[in-house]
Image (cartoon, rainbow, N blue to C red; front, side, top):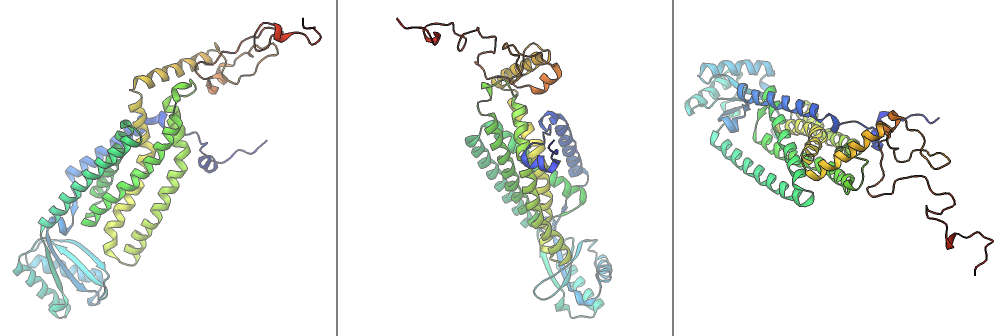
Length: 395
């Protein structure tokens, strides 16, 4: 007896048989709960806006003045003494001139900014010119946000048009819904964890849309292939064929996600974490979180939404009813499934309802039902001139 294949092998062959579409109410409930948590986080915690969006001042001090903890403590005391409030962010970054510490405060006027710079230089015993200061207005961040939203609207419009022309409008709606879910959940993670939102984050949001769309299109292409002329057979509902497509592309989606997450993870954990490239952190964070969520949304959300939309189509509704009615008849033993063994006289063997329900296969619409053929006839036709005995003479 052949040894049964493991889950990984069956996933690779598309034979895992996972009932993803059949449990779509569960996936919708999970997605709804996650969206609710994200919206509540937007309202309660809001976002940790970077200096480009909230406005403020950025100070840079050479890393040679002391440890990160010491410099942060001194900077907090100096900023508070000058009426600058609390430090918004503090990090160690690298640059062409060597490593340095960078911290950001709320927006200060020119007098407060110069006072903080002078005090820092005095505390660390360095020249004031070694402490660099820059000020960013919140208006610049507003312009970035407006242009990003405009780009998002144009992207979604072009994607919708392409999907309608390539597939159909229901697939376009399902794909765009998946993209919206991806954006909301990624933004929710940023709000919950308190990641800082910078222009790099906005660029990352637009980038993950392309990855999410690619994965959805791959799955939908297989769904279209499996459901082409599906109403010509009574063996599968639309949901069954779509579920088969998800299983057949599941390993591809997982592999694509892992391959995409590995370099992004290296960018985030090695580049930003170990090497101290702070400018890579914002972009790496949004890409890593967004791509991970995109794998989930393409498998457990996009196709279930498509099947739910197709179930409202009258043609698919009628087809699904025929398939379910036939399966019910097979389960009751009223008819034999396709491929059932037959007795010597041509009659079907007795049907086991449980085995028949599992089989569920059916002949194509319009095919001739199997029955007892006439004895001595060829193809069920009565014997005639074409069926004379071999020894008969022709007159």
